[in-house]
Length: 294
Image (cartoon, rainbow, N blue to C red):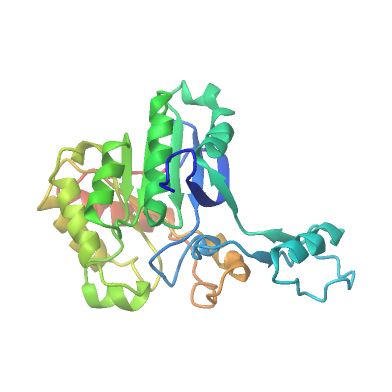
């Protein structure tokens, strides 16, 4: 059977309301599971895997002894085990949803969308579920709601084109320019990412783009990396703004959800306001507008 918007199902790990950091106005953000990259500082490790599994929330556990920290793998038995947990410490780390099911949740926030708000697709990597992401963007646009997407751009160019066409705002990450270092710390080379970024910044949807640089101590947060990225953008489109994202230390606490260890970022701290302003100055000195995050 051919997949249509009615039969497609996406793997979603969260729908977060009242966000002011993921596009204009007040946003509702849909978080997609699955990502082709394995960034050693990943802020959403619960979104790395493209499948749903039961996870144990250690902070919620009351040590009643009923499960001994394990839950059956089979879905039916896992559901029974979860129902038996008095503290609800076992949960599924995602949900399969149709486009209409996601939209029902988004529509609950439509009062905010009328005031420059809208819906943002994030992850994980939304373009890792390309057909579903495009179908959802189309559904949201049909209702006249502002759309945005946050993406690593590690995706086929034709898919990036479709997403750009159906988005009012695009937030591509540019983590690193150096290909060897990018491969070492994300698990993938950045060839396709930079190719897609070039096409975006030089194409008809360039006005929608705000390039984000995530600043992670020991990985991306240094003067040289920021200068190289700013020069790269300058050479392609002077009108493209840049947003520097300060490191969020809460990410390390999420690592019990995923397969990666959070030890590499466990002791990382956010940059000070003064350091962030120095980073922004480096961008502005290269003729690029730098947006200050809320």
